Amino acid sequence: MPIVLEKLSHIYQQGGPVATTALEEIDLTIGDGELLALIGHTGSGKSTLAQHLNGLIKPSSGRVLLDGRDINAPGEDTRKLRFKVGLVFQYPEHQLFEETVYKDIAFGPKNMGLSGEEIEARVRAAMDMVGLPFEEIKDRSPFEVSGGQMRRIALAGVLAMRPQVLVLDEPTAGLDPRARELLLSDIQRLHREGTTVVMISHAMDDVARLATRIAVLEKGRLAMEGPPEAVFARYEELTRMGLDVPQGCQLTRALRGIGGPEIPDCYLLESLADALAAFLKGGGGDAA
Amino acid sequence: MLRDITLGQYYPVDSLVHRLDPRTKILLTVLFIIAVFMAGQLYLYGFILAFLCLAVYLARLPARMIIRSIRPMRILLVFTFVLNLFFGSGETALIRLGPVVIWQEGLLNALHFTLRLIFLVMGSSVLTLTTSPVTLTDGLETLASPLKVIKFPAHEMAMMMTIALRFIPTLVEEADKIMKAQTARGADFESGNLMARARAMVPLLVPLFVSAFRRAGDLAMAMEARCYHGGEGRTRLHVLKIGKRDLIAFLVMAALYLALLLPRWL
Image 1 (tube, rainbow over the protein chains, first blue to last red):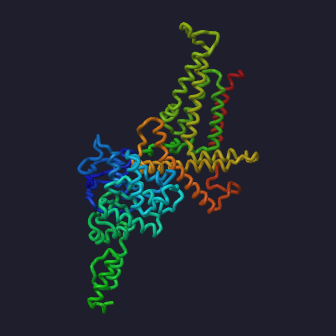
Image 2 (cartoon, one colour):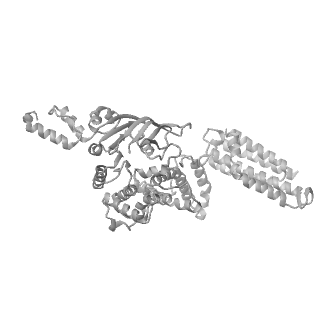
């Protein structure tokens, strides 16, 4: 179910003395099976945009279409919509509240009005998806497990609703490298299994690795949009916006800067390594 | 969702009253309240009204803000008036309607109590409208510090109040975020009967408390890291000073007292 944003604008405290425009005329389509990365500087409107996708906030003007239907139209059941578009907030572990891990993950499915067996099946599957051992931790308090596990419990809480679209707001912020790797591979697997994913991130290397498309926001406007190679090719513009570029890009540029070999732009370290290997094998080794 | 909550009612303009020492304003408010209860004759409220008008004028407060301050009290005011009016007893009956009698004394009492309540609220509003919460706590701390002799923890009380005030907006923001996160999981805060709604608050309140405790722990650690050890020997960035305008303010208050007390002596 594609999500289409049509001239979406959002103004906080509209009409008030401190009205601020968070989003301005955004046109964006999120197709089925995509993994769209939303990048931009702090305050560029990424989180505001994400919260529009499941109707948590309403646009000041413009429309959000899910499967061609305006989600904010009168008569639309926004609560049902939220089960289709799952939103995982920044630091989602701060929303855990139940006595046991099981009950917390079951909160969403329970709100959907599912039967007990169905809920159990979904909790089990969701925990499985994020690599949490069901029998081992289902009866533990969500407050006594590790930070990385808490994050994955919170993620499972959203996954248990089986959303067709998963929106993640900086899913790896504040995690240690190991927990981060685990979480990223979970996200990648979900995407491969057919879930549409929208991911807000500051970590360009993660974006480079996972995204099938990138949208760049700057001061509430859609500044760039396209496949990773096209967006990362606009290295200077991204840097000017105060954004990072993946290490692969930086290294390619650095090599060119010191008169290194002529190799194509590579945003992944792996493809850069391949390109260099090909170059060396090709007999151009005397340049280095 | 929760963002529209305004806390405190400080009206930030620069005025003579705003610049008064908070201690002066606190003491004047107490004196004003005593004055309101001293007025024995109805016409004496004229002086009190004049004093209040002067204060509001000098504070550059819009009159509607002061009038609005009694709005939350309106039901109480009506009750006070009606109860005193009908249930008083006296000697001179004004109106007789079957078993219902309105006595002159009842009417007087009703007027006295209602006016006193109104002035009391309006007077203290001038204090809170012209003094920021932090300044107010500073003033309270200095005023209460003589009580340290009897082991009253004046500094600690003031510090707790300041911290509480400082964290209210933070917690409001946090509550808003958690509420959205739970809404995204299908939580429903708006429908159902009272019990259902109370139960719906659990997913909001538990994370909010957890986060408040976490913040409290962090803050305590940060304060300790900066060698905070209570009020002893602690100096201030802004030292409160009593100036000429504070003395003038007290003189005006003295004039009000004189106006209220003279009729008793004459």
